[in-house]
Amino acid sequence: MNASAPLPPTPSSADAATALDAAVQAQLSKFSMGLSPISLALAYSDWLMHLAVSPGRQLQLMQQWVNAASPDPAAKSTALDADARFADPAWQQWPFNQLRQSFKASEDWLRAATQVQGLSAHHRHVVSFFNRQALDAVSPSNGLLTNPQVLEKGLATFGQSWFKGAQQFWHDVLTQPTSRQAGAAHLNPLPYQVGKDVAVTPGKVVFRNHLIELIQYTPSTPTVWPEPLLIVPSNIMKFYILDLSPKNSMVRYLVGQGHTVFMISWRNPDASDRHLGMQDYLETGVMTAMGEVKALTQAPRIHALGYCLGGTFLAIVAAALGRCQAKSAVPKRRGRQSDQQHRRQDDVAGWDSMPELASVTLLAAQTDFQEPGELGVFIDDDQLNTLRAAMARTGFMSGSQMAGSFQFLNARDLIWSRHIRRYLMGEDDVGNDMMSWNADVTRLPERMHNEYLSSLFLNNALAQGHYRLGGQGVALVDMAAPLLVVGTLRDHVSPWRSVFKIHLHTQNETTFILAAGGHNAGIVSEPGHPRRSYQIDHLPQGHGWVDPDEWLAHAPLVQGSWWPAMHDWLKARSGTPVPASPIDASRVVCDAPGQYIEVRYADD
Image (cartoon, rainbow, N blue to C red; front, side, top):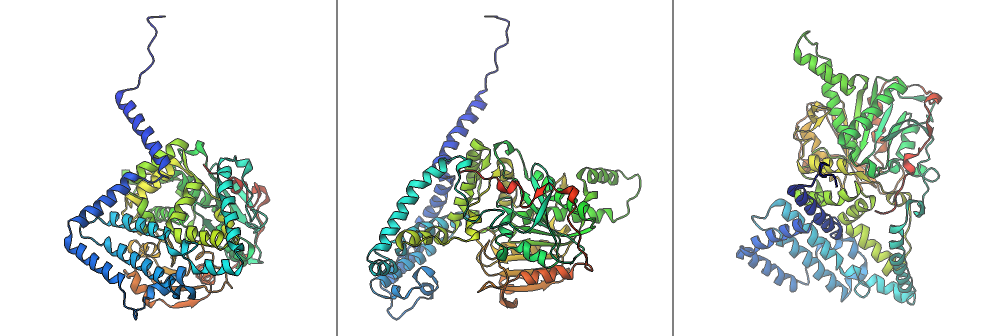
């Protein structure tokens, strides 16, 4: 052995300790389904300890429990009628009415039990959420012998519905592990095939980089509005939520109204993309797409529309662009060092190639994350640390993890309702284009997801003016374009009151629409769809704050789809129509919907 040969470096004790901690936390996150048991234990400890030192509150809760155990027969709860699980008349008959009454009383009691002084707001939210999830799991509507509708159907079919439900249960149990272990080449085909049944609006991919494909849709009218429309979907989802089957396609509708529509299609990342961050998605994604739309159409002004997280991306870029264009409109004094520095930074960022925004439309997009709704249950330092440990193994947040999280947020509708229909009633799943799209899940890169949760959700940096893009501070008040903001009434992902809070941070001319439905179904609200409605109101530039509940009480209610209102709003902020031009053949990369949309992965 050569005594003079250098010894290999040895890890320090600090590095070894960090690696050991990371390994333990990674295993912990693996077996806790991505949830932090420590965070959950802290929340319940906080609740139980404050309840233990509140004897007066305990007496109130005991009295409420006694009253619930001996209800007034003449009393009728409106909450019972409002719960869809117990809406069938069969629940009015004994003994099922007693089961229903006891269950609802337990719900009310648990809800009241979390109202303890001293309990932190976040811990109250966590405890209330998990209490509700646990109680929903034992609802009498989920039981074979405690659901009168299940019993009635079983007797009416001589047990065939129960037999079929059992078959479907064992089929799902036996096939689910196989699909999770399958490779990408063995994924089951989607019920609605992309490019054949959905995402079929004619168009071409006219630009591609590592992160996006940019689709330009073929005009279908002889004249078009001079300002093209760029759509920025969320990178959490495949873009064709806005281009489902032809009758449900927002893209097809807008093209049919004379808009020249462009769409970003995000690349589905893999482990090699783990270092892609928020800045990459903003600059290489949104800003690059804006510049390409301007170059392709020679239009100095464009409309921009963002959906969900894509709307948050768009708001950040629109605010930074408004600030930059406002500075460029102010004459600069020569030789001033700060002006030269700003000029250099603007040149580096490529702001000179950006178009002016004629309008900004934000669909179910949060810009203030102080009240993020049910997602806030999963956002605290310890939960994020557990999530980081899980992503460190793979380099991404898997599609199956995200799908599971969204199902957990609305377990009553997405898990237990399906359980009742498929396994207890023996009914087949009724597929549609949106359900097929929902199964086409995507990933998020490790760094981007960490930055998104830490910066926006945990620290609310955008609303507080702490977020930076290209080294420059971003403030929502710098957005100069008129705003059309759309929230949905039953949104578990972007609660409409949280979406509404953009009124606090901007003074632009703002039109707010509150649509019936949830995060997806409320946005995909094609004309002619039954039972659609929306409320709409307009605030001029320089508006003050309006309380959301006050807005809800006074905003006019309109029956039907809100899409025509969106088109009218865009039309009013557009120029005189011009003859439609074909897509530049020299810029065509491939046919729409492109190649990035086709990338799918098995469960991770």
